[in-house]
Length: 494
Image 1 (tube, rainbow, N blue to C red):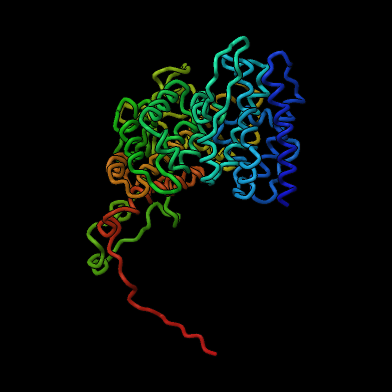
Image 2 (spheres, rainbow, N blue to C red):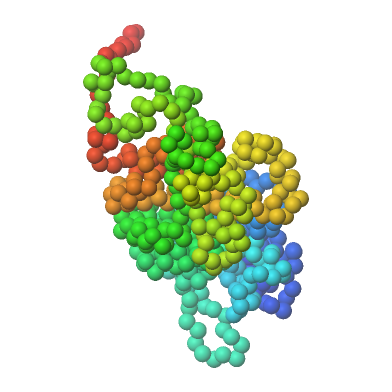
């Protein structure tokens, strides 16, 4: 079986080499045949790196699919269990070198200009996303592969007529130089830093964090950028408190950076908060029992046995529902890259707005339903998803707004996931800051809301666990643990 894998890899190397030679040479016209040759070879590489048989759906227009998806989402399409023996072979026969080389080819072709932005480069643009997925799969959860990548360098093409010696360029330096191109380099970097302690120590510092902050201001709310902050908070699933506090200090504690980087989240009580339209007309967020509250009130004897303080006490013992959750962000009606505003305004995205305490807010569900349109479209638009999807395809303006809303929604999910990861591993300085802005009952309201996508509720649940549950002192925050009053013991008889 190993020989069979080696033969397949050698065949891939030949195809990848042919692709590189074609794209490197600006005098050779880029043909569809060359592009699909590159894509098919990289699909084979990805298939080999995922344990078991990976079934790619037939009839997929991979160029269109790759160019229409954000890098983080495209990478997730190919998730699977890593295959360490095949990863070792990929290192031994230098398959990773060939994959990295075809990622360099478009830059060599158009140097010193950026290779992206022309119709001719639409095909190579799609291939570039496959390059990063292949690199991610070859390295996935493999310390030796990360070490290999971190030590490799390549000899750049020597300019014609130049007799000077050309120094090898490290792969990591090239990866960092390509970060502003939304083709997968930031996703690849995030995955590598989150799994390699050596690479993390060497590269994840304030300079790189500030660079990503600048890219958010320049390019807008792209999930791959906020995902980077999350990635450097842990290595191999272990919290790195120095990095957690660095991200907190540079992105959150600095109010200017916070306003330009994050969406603000807040819950408002419909009974006491003046708004237009009235919050009281919003559907309530029900508890799992289906009631607005548990409906349970302790009698006098039961009340004596209860702890005087426990998490969620006020919500649990009051009448009424959870307070609805709202968000807002710095938006512009005519947004463009490199503006002070984070992204398009709610007006530009045609999202319903509420004036609460003379400030404009958006109901959380009104923004995020687009992440699960098959289930939620009817509830928010009154139309089936098939009809709305067809309209998005026919009307470019409507379709663009849907994509922009989906991008902002995905960014917000990444933001929640990041803030939870800041608190992961009982990072108390981060916990202290986060609990000021994210009350327990607000996060629980998000986990219970049936009108939020499952991924949002999942991230909110993880945030609750890291911020309020997995922390000291457990007893004071969670209530007093008690043994059952009766134990029933069953004995199995012959």
